[in-house]
Length: 349
Figure 1: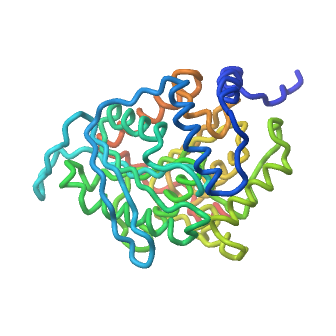
Figure 2: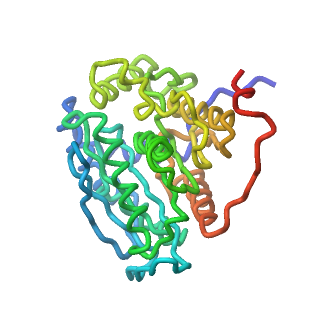
């Protein structure tokens, strides 16, 4: 039996067609115009999709980042009331997930309707506190400001966990797309700088190799491969600048770090029709070879952004349920798997 050719899920195609009809003007080419255009479409598409914004207790803070612009964050509690602070030594705090939005390092933010609604829903259904971090957008601000901002947000969350009603021993970190890149970078920074206990890194369609060495456009017919590669190159240039050596730095391309030992357990989601699927799946392999517990799930027929189409795409609903189930494990004691059968050095030969 011949192997079937990869195609986009019919539900994704239907929703994409509906949303494409709402695009009244072409996307500007300049970064600032593109950002404003995308923000306007976030409002239009959220209304068209009936995005529900749950009532939840939230609180905004600004964090000082030495040598870089300050970083903004928003705390989401699972209910309509802020949780009481915990005294030192007290137990019963909620898990805390530090999460970074995606947008190719150039667009989006925690005020976007889609991201804000998603944080509220995940906090409510998983029973966790979410600290959504905001980082400066390129090209006005470039690397290494963004990973340093995200590191400061993570440090703030860890240091303030008890005052938020959270448990500093039940920390998790996550992100999608460019936010997944920054989340993975922060796990490396934490290992190198502080060694705080992180229970989980949750990465959704992450961009982890900014040399674009793992970009895979095979089977993707919506946009020609040459155009995809050119767009990826433009985003990387806007974020990192022209020095190609920067692309290989571990906090820019976490997949290319020379050592992944000691990183937190990971759950990674990729999409078949996403050129970035190679990044996430290669990262799962290097983590496994380093002795890090890791699971990676590829969603067939899904695109880079279709995971956000809950209520309209069955696979997006399944992804949401899977993420919620994963986050709920933070309420439990972690499983100890012991040492892997092979030493990491032997596994990489």
